[in-house]
Image (cartoon, rainbow, N blue to C red; front, side):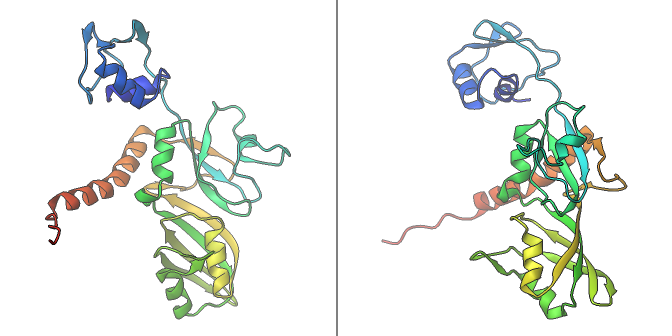
Length: 256
């Protein structure tokens, strides 16, 4: 783990402030002063001292996969005391939801006390793919579905390209698997309204490599470290690829 991250997660200060302390020579590892940024530290084996204070290893972060039932609010604190995900997690340490599912939607939610991880998942540039099972009322044509896949305008802004695959056709109704990489408020519902269809049921079944599986509504499971690391790698790779392409592209000379 990077030294500045270790210091920040231990609650001493921010990463930026930690970098300043390191450069000023106020941080020691196993008795030796460290001034180089980017230094790695083994938080379990090495002794870190910041301004003469021994820093304790940060507590282990908690990651939960929760199957939100329909009608339940995605909040840990509702002033009106309506049914929320908080009521299903009263015996757990304090965590918060990563993103949201509207009250009428159900399915996979990630909850954690790891702010850095939550920011990565929610940041638009990482484009976390989310998969939904969508049951609609209506009979859209192939052209209608292609229109949604290409992108439609919601509140003056076009939606990003997505994938929609029909899995079941009923009389006047249909079911689809839909994959999107953004998450605006009631986005899927509003997209189908544009083509004259109403969403009857909406279930999120995966976020990145994490799947809802057979998790029952109103229950949760702890997400293992391996799954979290796989998700981190899958999100960070596209950003590294973009950065590498920018380095490789020749710089343009300004015209005289």
